[in-house]
Length: 169
Image 1: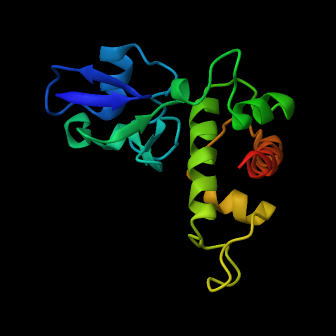
Image 2 (image 1 turned 60 degrees about the vertical axis):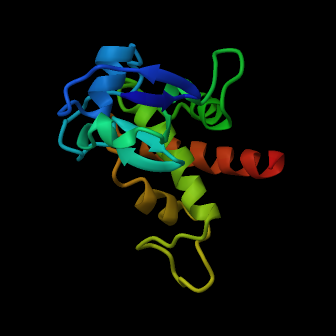
C-alpha cells in the first residue's frame, strides 16, 4: 500500500485493520499525532486528508491510498513554523502539550472550512457564511479536548493565525 503523507510517498505493508494513526505512529515514526482515546472522542489524533479534518484513529490506512495526508509534522519545520504553530506558541495555547498537535491541525482544517463557507451550529445565518467569532471557533473546535483547559489561549491563537494567514493569502 502507498500513502502520501506530508508530501512524501511511503510504501507500507500493514494489516488491513491498521488505523491511519497507527500506520503513521508505529510504521513511519510520525509520532506528533497522539492516541488519546482511540475512539474518536478527543481529537488528539486529528490529521488532514485532502485538506479536511479527520480523526485518524477511526479510519483505516488502506482507505487513503491516493489521498494527500498531512500530520502535524507536515505543517512546518522548527525554523519555518506554520502561522498556526507560531500563534499557539505566542498565546501559550498549550499546557501539557499532549493535545496540541491535534488542536493545531484541527484549527488549520477548520479555517479551511470557514474559507470554503461551511456553516457550523454556531453560524448565525447560513446564507451569509461563517464569521470567525469566538463562539464560532469554540463550536468548530469542540471535537478537540484539552484536559488542561487552555481553551481561551487556543481561541486567541486561532484568531491571530487566521488574521496572519489572511494577510499572506
